[in-house]
Length: 493
View 1: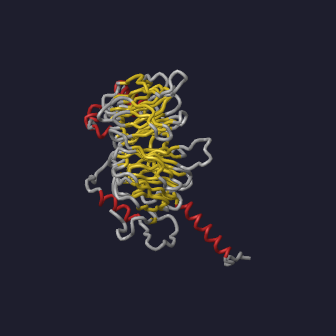
View 2 (view 1 turned 180 degrees about the horizontal axis):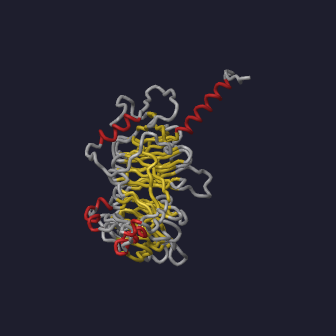
View 3 (view 1 turned 90 degrees about the vertical axis):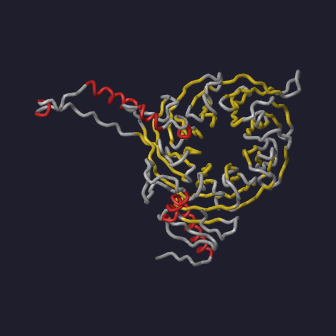
């Protein structure tokens, strides 16, 4: 659903999803979206969602939600799957139309359009410049289903180099800055230098291909291939051997189904999540299993857990699509829910089993113990991690009622309740913001501290969500500066 089908494709629309800020004049061709229209978008475009849902809702007055204005950015013609931050004020987007677009995160202005791929883009990463290089141009690498990888200059829009010798689609890219090489993962694993020369490669690994790559110490990388993790070590040239080499060191076979997510957590651990809800934390040095969590459907056991488990046995309900983390916790997107796993306690400390109406695709940590998530249902939601208040223990009743037995404590009945309280999650995730502007699945997002939130979607749109209070202040400041320049500003005596 598009708000303005008559507007050109490379335009921006601005509006206010909530009514809190003052109205302001909009440029010609721009449109303001009221909260009523935004509510209708969700239900008009998602008729399959049942009316009765355990989904947590929030009222009109979202007092803790700062994103009260939006800019709708149009340039893509198909699903927008990837966003990457280039610097403090620019980001790039890419998707199934094969186009890369560079944007200004402050104004929403389209800066560059990079055309070179003939099919959908499958990976997008930044490519750091050399420290010794005088020209610090921002570079990016893109991979595509057309079996090519292109190195772009995002300052000029120039196509620097292109590689077309792949035997399969490259699904993931990673730069090892310390070794000044980059790796591509498809049906095999290839190592390249900065000039895009092939240094070495593995043999054919799998028809399904490598789905994710991360860097770990000792010149090693971890590759997710189906339900296996493969540890590879890069061997740099020496006096004895002038060639690069890549060696398979170990295979980790602990997952029961395909691995969907693989990330570094800290200097000590990395974490994986699978299609059937297995989360495993690994030691980053010796690759042993540190912890495993497979009960995301029931983090706080109830008196009858079998009924709960039977209701949630569909793999899609417990697939782990994405992780993020901070110093204390791992935040997991599991099926339609969000789970907070404490690394020290090695247990789930908070959860929202139904955070969205459909699968959660991306999650990120914000300042002030806040979390943001997006879903296939087209919504973006902001959460706050809060500690639960401990309930005071009720005293044993005495007097008249106790004399007749009403106050006696049944030790056998109290044992399951006590166990339930001990296993209950000590924190909660409270909904503080609901951003509804997309009409289809929201694939991912970026957070800019000064410029707001950027989301991309299967509806071909990018939305730049703005802090309404901050934007109103900036507009007022510009207005006063202009009045002062024109001599129209008079101080009241």
